[in-house]
Length: 273
Image 1 (cartoon, rainbow, N blue to C red):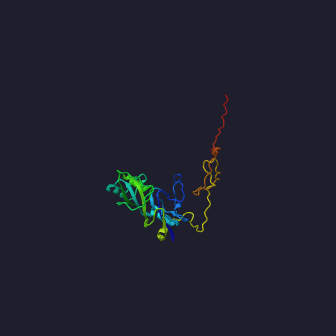
Image 2: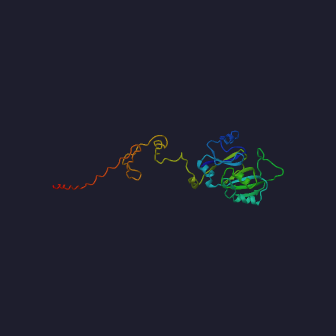
Image 3: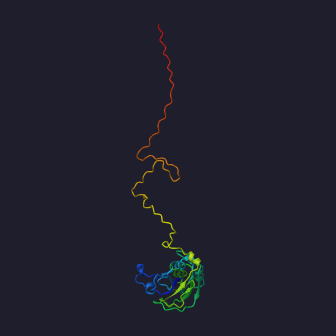
């Protein structure tokens, strides 16, 4: 059995236990709300979003919840600026083209104003511009996806609350509070979760030492030792020695000249007068 934490993340809290980047230094972290050891977020929720965040002490459970391959549906209640018409809702359902690709088909429907806690700080309000709540269900997790989707159809997001992940809901959990439950993934889901490199069993085989440190890098000023004459190459055939760049190749021996037959005729004596 593994532990699963259902946390209602307030507005402005970052989804980690320590502030990493410079922009997060002054924001509250999970450590101010969750005092349990060895639990880690399964997924994330932007600091300006509220609602359900899951944490667990099991790496395989974390992978099953957070990995996009499992496509757990995530349900959001979104307060947008303006009144979306049927065309805008159809675009949200069919897929919206963003700068990093088209979103997958989603569920989108208008809902009445839900009963939620007051947000601190409250959203901006404009007298002449109405607002509307939409329930959106997606199965992927692009960066700030819901906000970019509603902006792409002409209705910027004013407030974003995640109320459900898979079968886990936010019901009965106040902002800043959490509840613990036990989870037992089916064997099929456990088999899909890959082991981390550090926890992989050795299976009786020692890791071979790397030879990269012995190889001479190109351009380091060192010369490779010459290949001995007659050494075999990768194909197994012996290689002929190449002539040295500093010593000219010896000329081939000249062929012997063919023997020439010489005939000597006797000289004729002069006739005496």
